[in-house]
Image (tube, rainbow, N blue to C red; front, side, top):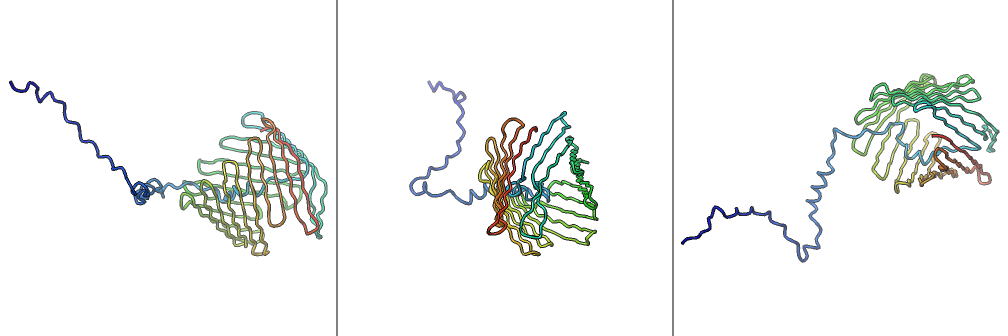
Amino acid sequence: MGSSVSHAGAPPPSPAAAPTPPIPVGLAAALPPNPEVQGDAKGVSEKVDWLNLPCPVAFEEIQREALMSLKPELFEGLRFDFTKGINQTFALSHSVFMGSMEVPSQSSDIIKVPTAHYEFGANFLDPKMMLIGRILTDGRLNARVKCDLTDNLTLKINAQLTNEPHFSQGMFNFDYKGQDFRSQFQIGNNAFYGANYIQSVSPRLSLGSEVFWLGHQRKSGIGFAARYNTDKMVTTGQVASTGIVALSYVQKVSEKVSLASEFMYNHMTRDVTSSFGYDYILRQCRLRGKLDSNGVVAAFLEERLNMGVNLLLSAEVRRIDHSKKDYKFGFGMTVGE
């Protein structure tokens, strides 16, 4: 008898498996991987879409990270701010300030006179519109308006009215936000006209320019700016026909610590100023400060005592000459969000 097992009932042969790469042995195990293969993979993962660059920051906010550390809201005296929300869009604010004000003097001595004022404010906040008004006991009225005319076009109005002649000011700004650029046109009193434009030229680099014309004084100017930012640092540079050269650098040490430096040169007056600042965010407080080449040391502390209650401490020491120093200390409290 022949074989009783039919070939039709035999299981099909298994497909050929892909050959496994050989395991490196000897000296090959200690060699680094092929750089050409790594370079190709890296180039594919970091391919830049030049037609879909990110939108840059506004030209007027090109130094916002550096100004956060180098320009804290310093004050001298006592300040108390209270904000009460009426509903989700409307709120009232009250502010009391008692301190001193510097009076211009021809000598090197600083003359301070005591001053105090009360400020009443109203805020209207809406997704498409923002209205902010402030009126002080000395008769000054400040108003700010921000209105989104379209998804890309925004109108901003800043106005200040005073009892003194020729001191009232007004400014209209039209901001347009594109896919990878921003532009702004400004109209103000005293025949002021200005425009600026900033464009992203790479995912991290943006270049911009601005021009202005002050018809009341027959003055004009032009300026250029550059901004380069990564996840850990931001550096900016600005130069203007008025003789100003400004450079800034911000290093993000961690999620809570940032260091900033700035260099300022005025070609007209030959003044050079360099500043160093820090921004430290803790769990319940935020500490900011700076030190510059003019001998100014300043610190600003904002501590959250409770929900909606913040304590403010401000200090500044300025060297007038080798034997005199000017001290400014402030204490404040804000209540309400």
